[in-house]
Length: 130
Image (cartoon, rainbow, N blue to C red):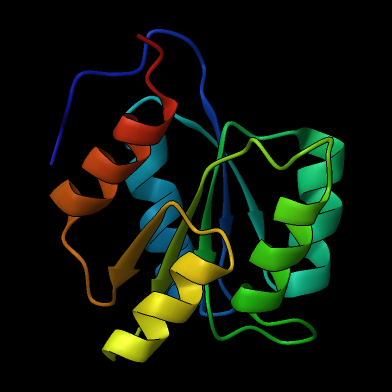
């Protein structure tokens, strides 16, 4: 699904240990004008967030080393990066999972499988400056 590209090169960190989802999301965002960087586990997600300072994270919940809930909570406790919005994505889709994700600091919680339109709209809503 093509949408109007962002007005500047918005940087999005995509974190998922599934090669299928990682490449799907990265390709979708790149094809819509976003600068995409990737990570495959929780430790790498924190490291790249600190180093790259992305405009937004698309963060899976089920990850090796540190899960997405832990990563989200840690990032939201760090003054330097707490302002960066986080979209949590997961096949864990119970109301409790959604509630827990939002409690950790996620701005949006999307259930897998999500539509291209839902992901693009979520990223755009969190990265578009008024």
